[in-house]
Image 1: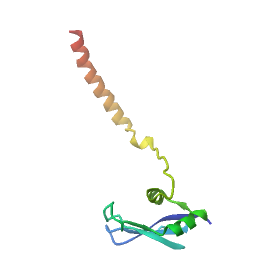
Image 2 (image 1 turned 90 degrees about the vertical axis):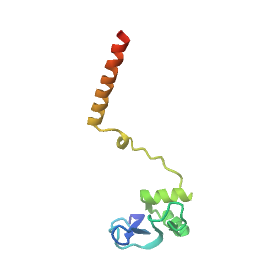
Image 3 (image 1 turned 120 degrees about the horizontal axis):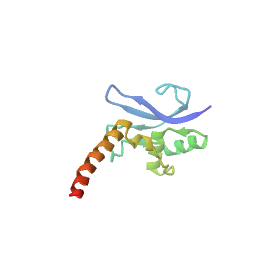
Image 4 (image 1 turned 135 degrees about the vertical axis):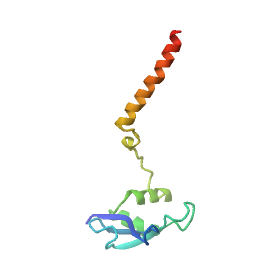
Length: 121
């Protein structure tokens, strides 16, 4: 059974509240889970103690049993110092699209043309 430590959404519309749960990866996001490990309230300020609460002993237990944390949970664990910080590189996301590259080239050519005229005089 492939285990995941992930977020299960609760709360009303535009007022999210998440439970940190250990569940089978085949179950739906808000469906059946094996154990509730903590809570996450994104509406609270980032420096608030109440924003993320986790039972670290149980999280360590599930990690030792082979449960894989999702990306968001892995970031929470890195912030808590339980997991080493992973390097994340998504270079394609920061790269401009084809049209933006073309516009930048045209702008550079236009800027270079007056500079050449001034140098010729």
